[in-house]
Length: 419
Length: 58
Image 1 (tube, each protein chain N blue to C red):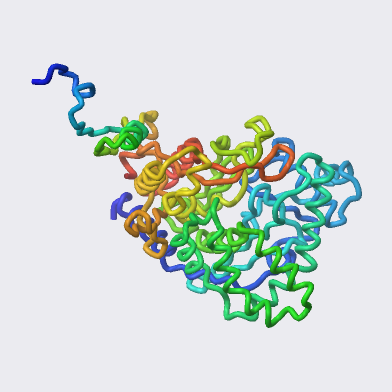
Image 2 (image 1 turned 135 degrees about the vertical axis):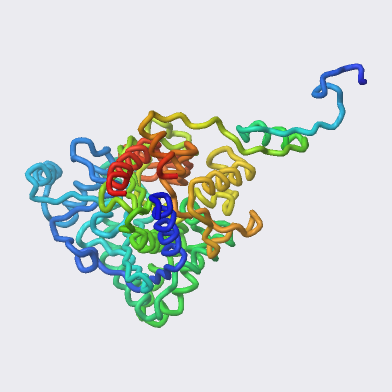
């Protein structure tokens, strides 16, 4: 086989793993129990690895709050001293098989959605959402509210949800995402339909397993107002799927995309665990309040671009026309984005149909060769984070070209020399 | 031949083939003009190393 033929075969294998994967939501477990290698003194964050002094303000704040929350330090100064001394490990969620939305702060006690793909024996984990932010105008208020919410997630929501999920035979996540697409989600910025589908799948199990009426009411109230909830389950499923794509010799398919508010990072299937990074782009979108402007926002942040890694989110933008309001767009624009993503991907995942475009499949399996050939980079639908924490808007952005160029050069050095 | 040779001003139905940037075609469609979109963009220029790599790998 020629080198090109080997790459084509490897990429078909990568695509077929995305197609054959059957991720199932099986549990909710604290990170310390679920993640291999996790310790009490480890704080995980979204995006590729980054030095503490380069980290963006909301992520730094989250890491410090995580340390305080876990009782590893009593003051912010003491927490920063632990980081500086190396007594606390600060590392990407991805390095531990997990993903985290926005700043992605995940500590030992954080309850995680646990998803397993039995076809490839691949696991994915995602933090649960703390819910709508309050106290954004005051940093101390915001931190206090966030930590109160973390405690509730750990002590009430996580264990209750775990019991309910384990009472089911497992909830297959691909059908949830496919149904959500049919109902107007693109499974990244819009998850209203998916969250309803998830609630529907859980409600009898919650009724059967939670006998405390007041607690059940709290859980249902949380699920009722959190219309982004299904994203954390989808992200865990996407991580399990993307893990299965990794490690295929000769493959030029992207197996991870994530951002930390400073750098955008990608991994390539045929290049092992190496990260390729470039400066994260700013987000074009709409702020939820007129008090916020671009000056309040950090660049692209979060592990939620794992959804585009498997061909959803920005790749199927036309499935959720309502999101065009965030970018002053149009349905024609959304369709053109889908067609652009077709030019940089291996194929169309037929289980994820875009009903508004005659049921075409989601363009999936990003090929770094095609990105460089066309100059088109993946479009990411995403929320906008405030410089001091909290979500203040939503819109879309693109992956920066630089990380794809670096990856292709490295791929070339490795494989043209061994060909 | 119409009095005004410019078809954009003559009032006759327009038949547009829009090459490249979709935004122009989209705006014409919003004005009820029939548009055929041709997907095209200028070839991407890379340095010699990347150009040679793409020839080898794709």
